Amino acid sequence: MVNDLLVIAFVAAIVVFLVGTLLVPYFRSKKKKKATLSTNDSATKQMQLQAYERLILLVDRIALPNLLPRISQPGFTAKEMQLFIIDNIQQEFEYNITQQVYVNKESWHAVKSLKEQNIATVNHIANLLPEDATGIDLCRILAEFLLKDKRGVLHELVSEAISFEAKKLLQ
Image 1 (tube, rainbow, N blue to C red):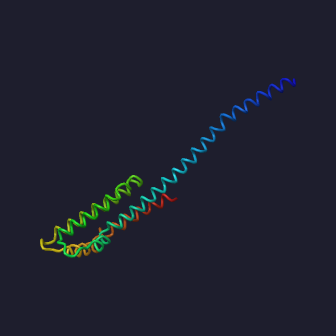
Image 2: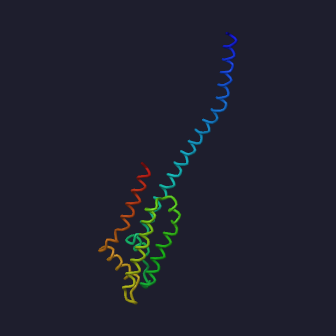
Image 3: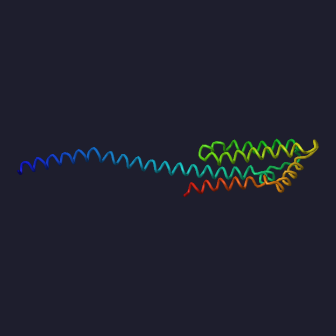
């Protein structure tokens, strides 16, 4: 009977040893993988937050009420100013185009729509001006139009939507 107990104890010890040698590395591997995934999630979230930050900055930079005073050039014709404004909007947008990888489709679509709406507004107003209009005339009439039209606050709505998405990411 003592021999039987010794054999059972010996077999149990071998089983415990084998299970320990096989399962401990497995669980350590799972724990390490989980920690890596958690780190990756944190890094991804950080990149997404930075992308939303960049988009809010982009929206602010291409908002016509902010853009016009910043780039106003005396001596430009209305046509030159029109092209200069559109070029600035395009450059800002292209500089930030990679941010779309990190944000949701709706946020990116809102920024893209703002860009297109701003360009359309500039083109529309510029086409209404006489041939001899100056760049200052174009900027002045654009500013007046934006004060009266709901498109003048479109950039604020886009900023709020992007900010909302960024805050959701933080929760």
